[in-house]
Length: 198
Image: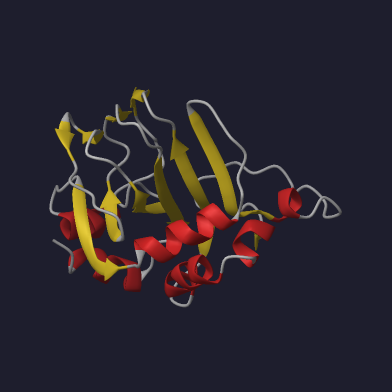
């Protein structure tokens, strides 16, 4: 499947999908969650491993490879359960494939995420989880660089990024940046959606 996946992305490190979502509705629900103040970087799980969401559940057995998401069951967190529009965004994917980790990623004003790679987040990697990114809140001084080149993501858009490549983020603006990230198990529906993107 790896060779097939490479032909889908045609060596592109970024693909904007045809799906779009209402960023204002997403932001309204994020604000309603009354999240705590933070410095630098903040991660809010909307969907997480079952034993983290429900502490009465046992830890899953040790896994040789955590990358494909099959090492545990996944549950919606209370944050997602009280956010109907965010739930509908997640459902747009999990009605068609298995969705694993879903998070809100907040980057504080004046913060920088240094260049790094995520070794299991690319369609081209065997047993990878595919991550899609949907910006919710940005400002004109937020830059997401992938292979040293800006990705022009706008609120409500849905992007596939090959995150095994070097990437970094800067937020030199006066407001936080908020992205929604959705991890899923690649299947033919997902592959077609990426293949049809631009």
